[in-house]
Image (cartoon, rainbow, N blue to C red; front, side, top):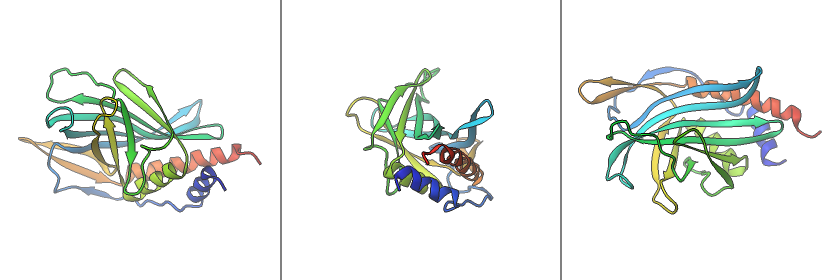
Length: 217
């Protein structure tokens, strides 16, 4: 059984589960951290093509900006075409302390969990929208492990550098944060729910079932 078959089998029989609940964070009022994660499916002519989690987060960039705040925006998704599937990351980076600063593409970006990373696997990096980079990773043992850990833990870290061989900036993403409400003068109240993870998982099962139907008999 290859990696794709193992993933399909595990998800479709329900090895991944998520129970939705609502909570409001009380202890992470900093501007730094996740500001929102929203689930969004992508369909074409009514046929499911992708399951994505749209994210927005801020971080102090000590590698390239002397600790100045930056925002990263993009999505994490699983895309299916016929029997082929990829794990994809879209990311754009913007300086928060520069008025009207545009988004810029990082040189390279990857996902990592406690025991898995896409940094060392085969990937395809392309320019996306203006200021955004797209990274596509084929499903293999490492990317499958990362997907499982990401959904189970409800968190993932995005790493990126701004130039070749540059130092990586690591940005933790809390997949349960759906909003960061500003509180005067300079704090935030993060609101959490498992809803985005639950919706992504349901979409994931659907897209895998589509893929299974297209596998060679």
